[in-house]
Image 1 (cartoon, rainbow, N blue to C red):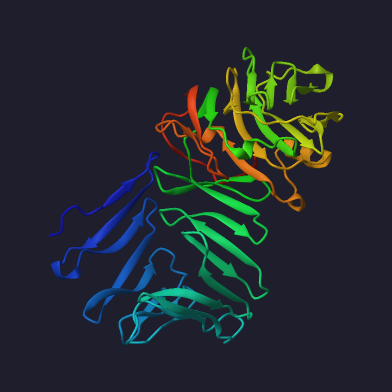
Image 2 (image 1 turned 90 degrees about the horizontal axis):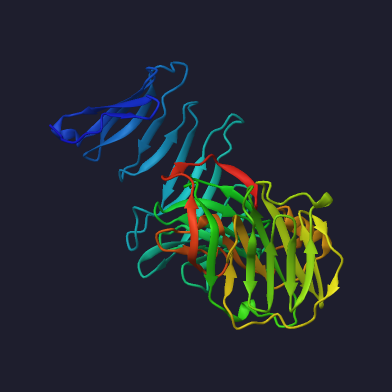
Length: 425
């Protein structure tokens, strides 16, 4: 009699699944049925294939109107045909080269029959062998489209090129998860993983839209103080650069410094105004009618210098340009939130200047596709910090910040987040 068999799973509201097993010692602990709380059952049927018991069909008992999915195996005991509940089969093919690796390399997937008749749609796979290991090199789909795969110049990267010659480089983390996709112009999309769960948590695309993926711990870093080591990228001298930030203050919170880089540049806010300063020259912004900023809502501010002219935007309201051609360099570290009473959601730094339309779009969390993301060098989501390691991670570059102060508030334990798509901010 096998031990430690899972027989029932019950969630927090009493919904459950029951699992039944074939406890014949020769059946290798096969589960034979899964039943949910409403009585819906799925039965797994086994047949001896090459001396091993394998699933050959799955029967949905209660859904009597559906057919039984069928699984067929070839002479080498490999799965060869899958027939769905409508009875339409899909055939799989394998590389039969005894000198290489004949059993595990799939060469073809063919949809043999569809509602439109027998069309024999193929997707074919070709491989190259590297150190005796088969690596995918080419795929061809039924429409004639071809994808070519090759190793990227960076470690843990893969280049995919389509039939029109356009390429994208996929970058992988140490867990094998795709964390960034870069096109030929170095435009990128980013996927951030919850390192404790090895699961995708968020995706940020080239328009700076964020998709909440799996888990969100609900935590916010209140009154943050984050220090980022100085680096050449933060010293544009007299050149173009921009800073984007989203912040909010509740009643009773007074604001402070959002970001500063010594005497080079800074953004600060109080309950009625935001000040953007570059090389000693400042632009001061207010909401229409001098509405208060401690209203509990997030506000977006963009400071951009282009060709020696400084402009700033608060919630899409653009200021007039002023001259600010001095050096924005400093030997000090970048400090985010020092003395800030409130919450900072995100800060990003760009080595590029923006037009009024671009800056206004950024200040409301949007970034039109035609603008691209050229020049984005750091992106700090301040609510994505790792409280255990004391870091706020830079999603774009390698300029993580050290958390020197602040209080984490929110849910004490992780929770499943509803999959959603939001603007950055």
